[in-house]
Image (cartoon, rainbow, N blue to C red):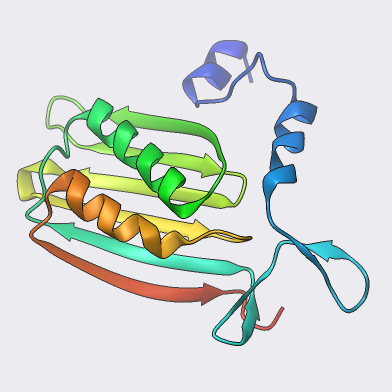
Length: 159
């Protein structure tokens, strides 16, 4: 793959891969029964890989504003106590809408928006010592959503 293609895909070519790996040292972890260090979490008494929120915003605003979406995702990362590694957003033209992802040391937040419908679909998936549920009020306020629906999944239950 050539350098331009990597840049367009959102990869930071100036940051060596070993540096990117070191960023994950901020993830909360514990030592498992077999002595290995992991980043699994306990949620409602269940050991799992992480919490995955499926968030739907209805009658929302600013869904075609890439700068506003960037700020909202950064506010979510901060509220959840996560570690941002990279944000990549793509603005669709001429019809509008944005798709993108905030890549976290603890997983990711993704967004797909349909501004013509006032609708956005987001995935908030985090492991480690984070609070992904704190993203929901941040998103509701940032996009002025009149209705928000959230489904919570525990990923990798019992691993």
